Length: 386
Ligand SMILES: *Cc1c(COP(=O)(O)O)cnc(C)c1O
Image 1 (spheres, helix red, strand yellow):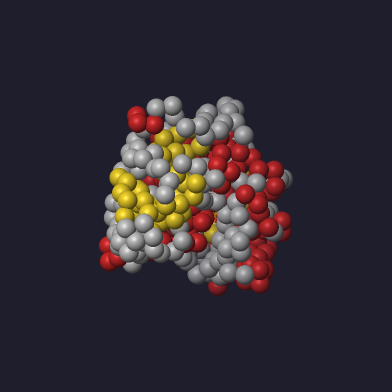
Image 2: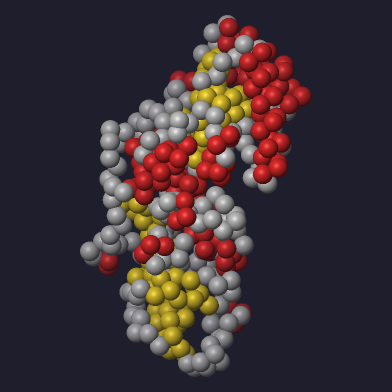
């Protein structure tokens, strides 16, 4: 680790609602995963503002940790990285029908091509660097297997003409089961063989995201695309935690207790009184709600927060701006720090635990942190990439 999360000395000077992002953790996670998948390279996926963590800062940290490429969904996200001065290869794979591929080419952004039409549009503004995407069974974008033969033939022609360069061939798993993964890999292998027969010699073949990259060496080829693992959350739904994988959550969501009150046995708290006090107790009010990304579905789901070094249950319904925590008979005061989720090594609940409490995945918990929450960065990025 190159840095540790230390509380700022003056808590009162910090934002009311704060997502603290530890860039040292991002760098550490990428290093752990890069070691694991070597000799395959790592593309750090920083789409959706780096899963809510801040795209530019996390991209730099990931490159310092050993990622050699960056991946995003759309061109605007790729351009944001270029405008910040990041020069590493960037691939964008989900395009508006009118996306300006000319701007991508001018900015040196690699274009994920999912159809014959996109291939022609890229060639028209070429020389374009492209990754051809085959749909191996996810049924989202990507060239269907039935059209693959024609698309690779045309790509070879365009490459020969010097208007495109096929840098990569890729696909994406459905994260369904090992059997479905195996079937998708078989389609991918057929697609690669077809491309080779057409004369294409891509630098990188890639299909694995975090889950397969971690557990299935056969899926790694020359490159894996790591999103969630970069941020220290688990890709697995089987109970394997991020800590089991040696990963550290990069984001800590924190705020301060906004109000404290003592209530009698039987008192209801928050909307619709879905919870009542079973004994006299103290309730602390936490000023974060579903507008800030706290899932309303976690109401009554067993979610916890860390206050005063102890985990406390969230009680009653989570509202737009606030929720209530039962702190029992402890002496909790207005202004005390509340850690909603963070690094379990500090005793905090994880975003993955909040996901379990609300029937979703950790990806959604961190990605949807709302605009009222300030981002603060901790840690310095080592090496020259910053
Ligand atoms: C989001 C995404 C990834 C990253 O997936 P993780 O499970 O977060 O590692 C990789 N590839 C594509 C095409 C994606 O859309």
